[in-house]
Image 1: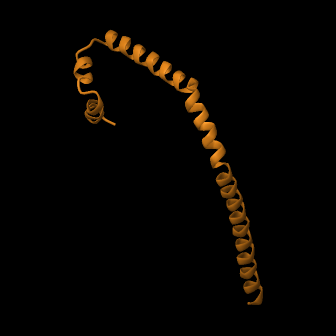
Image 2: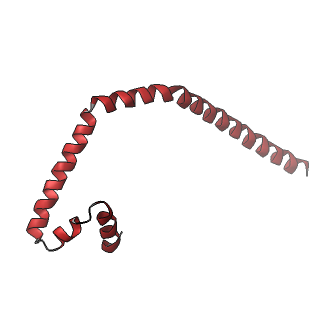
Length: 100
C-alpha cells in the first residue's frame, strides 16, 4: 500500500493524526513508534486477560464443536469417496487399454 492510500485510510478514523506527525523529525517519529508499539502491546494483553471475552470464546468453541466434528467427518468421507473414484476411474482406463 502506498503512502497516499494509507494516509487516506488513517485519516478516515483519525482525521488529525497524519498532519500531527508529517512534520516530525525521525527521532520524534521513532519515539511515537515506540509509544504506539507499547500501547498496542498493552491493548493486546488486555484483550487476552479479559474474562468476558475469554468466557465467550470458550462458549463459542463449545457451541461450534458439533459443527466442526460434522464438517471433519464429512471431509474425510468425501476424501475417501474421491480416492475410490480415482481408483475406479484408473481401473476402467486400465481395462480399456488391456482390451484394445
